[in-house]
Length: 223
Image 1 (tube, one colour):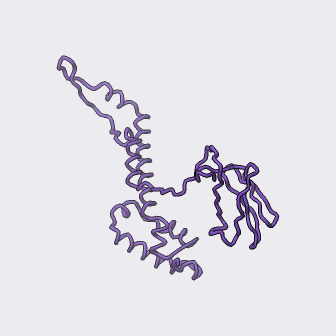
Image 2: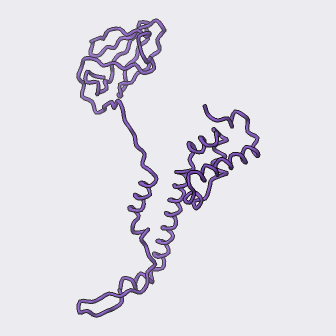
Image 3: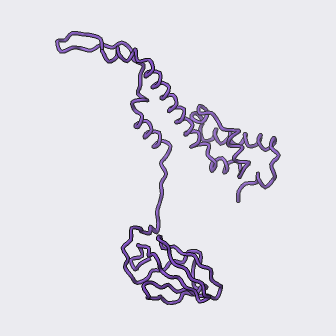
């Protein structure tokens, strides 16, 4: 990186006392093989840095250096990024808002409206929609698909590999198979408390261990 410790520097020569060398790429990264007693120095625009010995590197797998130059760059290094995942509830609300016209769809029927003179008459738009059979059928079918997808996502949200693995102690292919075989229904997941849900997963794992000839290592709880 340059002296701001924010911008990466491309085409910096990386030289070792062992005779190997390389150059940084467009993201300031480099890879070089050195011996246990070797040192590195960096050179940019014919200006070299001091030597850095391997034994003094806190992390030889990712040794970062800031050189005394200022380089404008379209890339910036973010030292720490905290990523927050949206909850299932947030995803569900966004999905409902995106497809509000579909979720709020109601089967058309006869409706009335009041004209400018106070006369009551049939709603023309509703009359037209009654005979738009294909549109009505497609909207209903689409809403049903969206509802099924939403239910499947909720099952995935609660019956996920991390939670199930923690409860059962399963891992690897044994866990993958268990997730498929014992996937609960939406009605059960939506209506079960945390205690009831955990009890189901445990009892299912006991049954699973009896019928599946996995090796003992595959069924051990993770350390």
